[in-house]
Image (cartoon, rainbow, N blue to C red; front, side):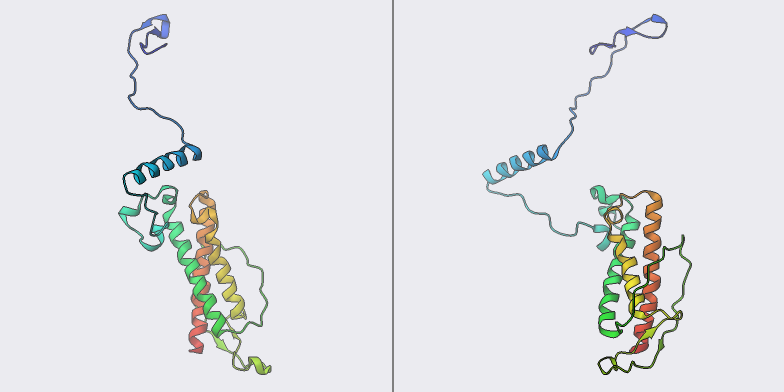
Length: 209
């Protein structure tokens, strides 16, 4: 067909007489330049009338502080993989708490071991009973006993591993939900590992309470 009449040749060479619909809407691609030009024009117009554009207030991640909520379902690109982002935010918050706890309760005389990859799905791991060992001979550390879990992992190293696993969810492909499905499953497995290790850290801290 040519033009707006829709007249042309169909199958078998027969003439088509149907009319193609014409849209009343106009579409165009936007760019950052177009956006900021429109924002500047809107700001100038509102200032002329005695008002101004108000800055955005509140959380940019409503899935973290108000989840689930129907009114927060659509938040632009942050609407992708909301369950993953809620899990990642919770794991990161737990990691911050554990690091604060370790700084005041546990000793720091242990080395970090490499962090092995989690399994899919992570097997359930009940908290191992914490053991209070004899204080070290160093007078500076006499009142800070070394706490280990059931597999002889120093609690400082355990806390660090839990924190590293929890903070992985803050990667830009996880917290924005832009990762593919297999990567999302990996991030969820790391979050589950952080939660499992976190329970062991809390059990060790409770043993000193």
